[in-house]
Image (tube, rainbow, N blue to C red; front, side, top):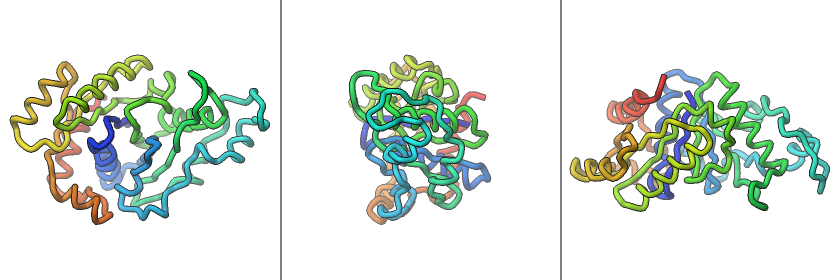
Length: 251
């Protein structure tokens, strides 16, 4: 199972990604949670102290130079470096969830392909296409890290929305970007709604995108952020929220 979770900032996409990863780990699955958002928060939502974040892969310049064969300042390097050992070496294990942090993509001209970005894309391709473990990608609203080939291995892209037109607009942007790289299955998770009528209104706004998950506003989830603890408690309610999403995943 390979899932990409995205959405406008503040809608709770990292919380949804952590709920998915924690549930899968608690039910005996091997799972890698990839923090591909430059504003990396997955470790904090897992309840990890901020000082214990895993190192950003994109900033491992010496390792990347060795693996890609890129001399400093050179424009020639391999596009398929060895990456199979990276999860074992650099993932942070948090109670069975292996967390990897990608770091911010390197910027440059349009379509910039540098050794760092090539390395990150190769790592994602390995995890999504060649790995037999569950992979949850916590992404920004863009798709900077995902190449067209890697996208073919994503079972579904989940666009998290909250009541409000801006997050709905982002969901439609996600759907367009996903289609551009070959992701055909996009589903919406409605988060932080406060009433059935609010849920119905959001569902109508995102149509024809299907609503595959519903997580109502929960004060305990909000409080967990202030307390620095993981919001997923493995309760019947929390499991049901995740199981509802997983039941809609193709295959």
